[in-house]
Length: 460
Image 1 (cartoon, rainbow, N blue to C red):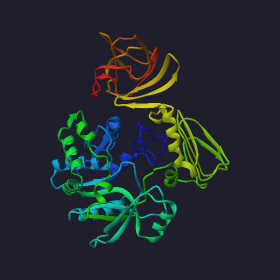
Image 2: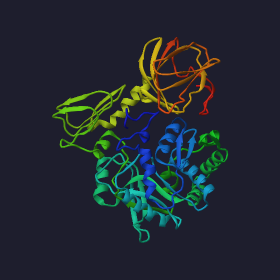
Image 3: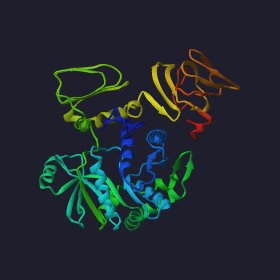
Image 4: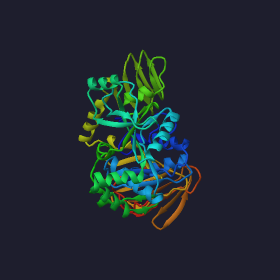
């Protein structure tokens, strides 16, 4: 739980937590060392589609296949959709299933493990990757390895084990027989679909229907919602790996972490001589073994030990590392209060750019709007608010009613309530403008779209 950097509208997969690239970008880039790799298949939800597409475009010239789930149904239906898409491209396709939010520090070791897994997949095996544990962890599932399967570092799977308590986890690690369950897999698409047909035919039937009735929307493939919504919610482990007789686990030690908590992020971060991981404008005195992240202002600490401090524009988290799992309870409390901080950052990303709240009151709100070069907002109107736009930098092309005109820096216009309008950046640098909204209701759902380049026409 990495609240409040990670939020529903901007989860950790899309954050650059361990380097310049986001975790999603790192996952895709990790495949560059493999031979004969096809186009990546990305499964994500509606809300994140443009963010995912933009991050992928930033790192690869090859267009990726982005498939949109209408609802979340766990990892097995997602893998089934990927397998169905894979066999339409190549009947002999293999699938490497990777969560997009893991850290792998040693890419060479990971790629070597994938190469070993390919030989087992060619024999009709379903391969999972087990991480050699470095300490007893209660936040991971475990795999007990059985006898050696063949002669290439693969083992039969004796059993999968749920997240244990600390004493049990310690026994597992000391025995040397257990591996952390990484949630990464490799198998032939046809092999996976055959196992699913045998073990959960209802899931396969509904995934096949959802994929067969899917439709293209811009650069995305939308699954048919009714069929997919009726699909059983289940993981690959439960639905397939715990039942199959063809499972193999390959032990790996690639510097892996699922970065599931702030303490895990501290462990993999670059620590200074006092054991602190420092990001941003931070001054500390007598502080040790802490993770301190400042985004917008100076953070100063004194005399702290084993703490997590994360500052963003709209929230500050202070927690003992010993109690980082309790952050979930804080998020539940925020949800119960209907607070927006569980879903949105102050800066909200859209396919055309972003907006950031600057100030607000009962009947007004001020935003900084950034429009990417060449991007166009929807042709829209509002029932309850008027808007005043002031260009700060760049060039804006404005549609207001029947008029179309251009504004440059320090020029402004007023959009009365009920008037159809549109904002466009015709230039080659980002357009920044201040928007002052005034009216009886200022919610984002007071938008009626008449035309939209991103398939969002209609009420917001």
